[in-house]
Length: 155
Length: 168
Image (cartoon, rainbow over all chains, first blue to last red; front, side, top):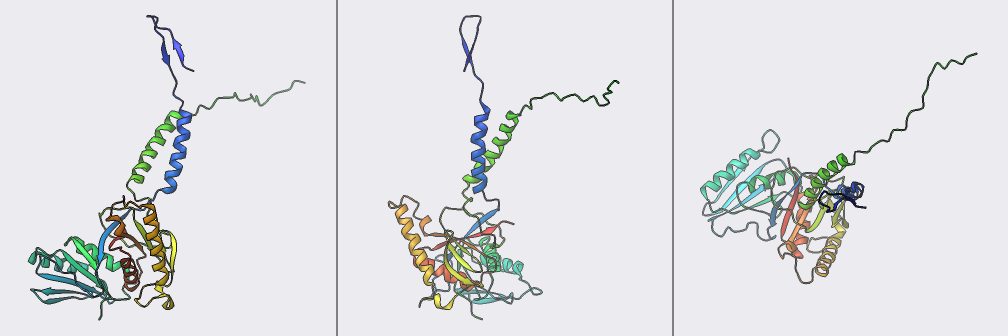
């Protein structure tokens, strides 16, 4: 109930008290709901596309080459360049583990040599785990704007 | 005999415990602002199952509200509903159709597409989002299984995939 306070001029002012209890009730309900629906994992997404089964590469319209990367279970990697420049780059394992540093360097040099390269197709052996594939996609995305996942690699 | 009251116990005065509601309101406001901020970024819908170990990577692409598929060692979930069973990340041989895609997963995609159309008949949702698929796969998922699921998704118009990772 607002209380009127006497004013020297005779005008009445209404003082009111803020009812914090009701606000706290609303906050408790809201916070409970948001806590239940919140995800405390720091997640992110990477955009990729999938190449059609028949096409192992997606042609880069402006670039004069196509690049396909194959990952193998024994931690080997192979970069195939097709088109104006035909070559294969074999990246052996590094002490039984993936040599992603060399992979990144090779991709950078290819991008430097062919600046219009836009898409890289990455494939893996059928039994290759998802983790190294994601790592390869992450490295490729630092160099080219688009990455596509191709059919399973053959040895 | 005088009673000695060795222990002059006085009844404690009833002190009104004044609850500092103002301070509580301050704290609640801060917590609420934080939770609203995380809610608005749209990643609250991405809650992988406890048995799912996502791979680690750094990525900065935009998260969108789209169809979600989760791949664990024993199942494939589509929008948190069981779509197909797996055995150690592999599809059962008798569950595959002639084109290599799983029968029950295809049915789940058909149902998901129908649900999307009934929810957005006027296609008021961004058309690009309707072709995107959020993929939450365990880090040990074999590439063949992932590829099979993406091929099945591709049959129903899902051509762009958002691989969910944990940021390092």
